[in-house]
Image 1 (cartoon, rainbow, N blue to C red):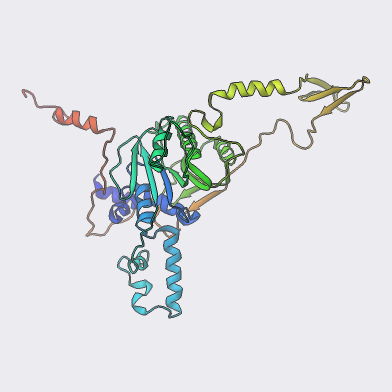
Image 2: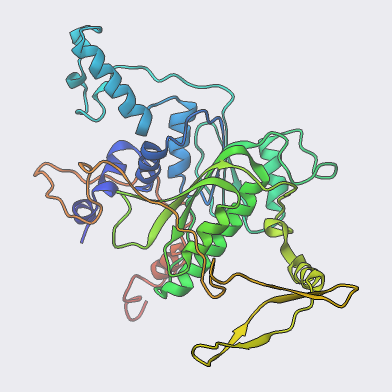
Length: 400
């Protein structure tokens, strides 16, 4: 089982090396952009859990260098094709004369147009190899001390002693491709992933501007629709997207939140996640104390003779001794009904693209390439060093 075997089994792993991407996950972001046009009018971005930096590499090439991928690429390709059919452009730049086939032919005939005033900050616990125009931070997104570091990277004039944890120059887009080391216990993995997503969301709420976008990885599980409903509080539109480069056998998907609209009076802070933090028990106690005191009552059904429990009855006694009883109208909405909001599910990527779960026959002259960026600090690095010190997998020979 060598590299050529993995090239057969994972087409996107092979394409990532051939096209210069640090990891195959770059295609996931590109396919999400094809569907949702994530990079339109975007100049300030925060990339969370960025190592090894494939998503940051996409941001660098698209926003800083001005290269065209995803939606911009095929829109430009279609426009040039129509111009060619109408003989508006000369035939020597026809769409079929590109150096790398139909997918990239048009892009070879145009020079990239770099953009100005682009700010991209990448954060991860693992070190990230430098990228052109990218500010990298090695920090923990679940720790409150990360917010001042991020705000300082976004705005050099930020002073944590005199300013709050809100960005003076907010960003347009926040990305998070982070995931925990899976254990195989799906319920545990989904729970840990949801907590990582909440940490990314809390950080995004501190730096995201109204109308901004938030994209994060999720693990689909039994109660994930509750998470969708919570995100719907802060964003106008929430979608669940599955890129074609994401294996169908994987429970991963991506939550795409568009048009950030925070509730009135909401202020984000990692010390008080989602504006509540440790004050939740006190807030619940105050809310319960403000509710009218009610007592459960039992009423008999005259038809069946059964005794039914009426959960909520509010009694108001007037000065003349008349008692008004307000009973909830159970015919409108049953009190025991579980109300959930289901996010639309969108499949991203062209159907003619490679299938991430399929194996492909390689040409006879295929040469397997090395990864563009080897892991900088993999968790297995220490184990490899100890194995080498002991003489390999079977230990040192006797007498040495």
